[in-house]
Length: 213
View 1: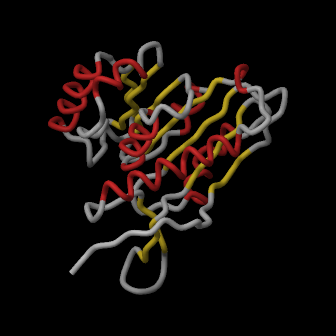
View 2: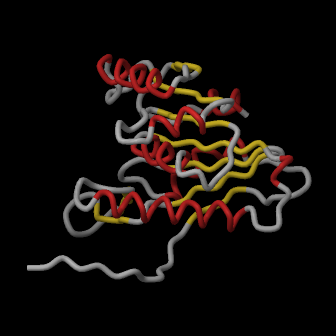
């Protein structure tokens, strides 16, 4: 048996709140977690929908039924199967979204935030360190850096970038060991993220969002 590969063109989607204009001050790229769909995830950022902010929510390239063979559908960025291919595909996709959104825009005057929630935190980390996008702030929300990133390059790329770690105090997935792992990974990157804790579980908190905006 031989494994063979081909490259194809395909269509993928993202959702947008707001329109880029001269009044836009902040551009947010927000990446959902495992089992979410971008059209619903972006609604969690509705409080930021004003003339100052534009929110872009790309969707994971792999969709599946959440239970059985019918009903609600979710998306994921990758699984353990053929993971490097999935990572390469979603990084290329996110780069295309980024430059499609910013085509013809003077983004020197924009503050660009990359935010990843849960599984999206690892996704946004790999994307941020791909070196094809510029950004001012990286937010890992209810998630941590993946251990397979290029730490040497990461130290260069994240120098001077604001990095935040946002966690609910009742988050059922981020226990003490995961938090310790995040601290160790940050040390390898030569950074110390600004820690923000809120009262809540594994979720997007509107009050924290507004404070960050």
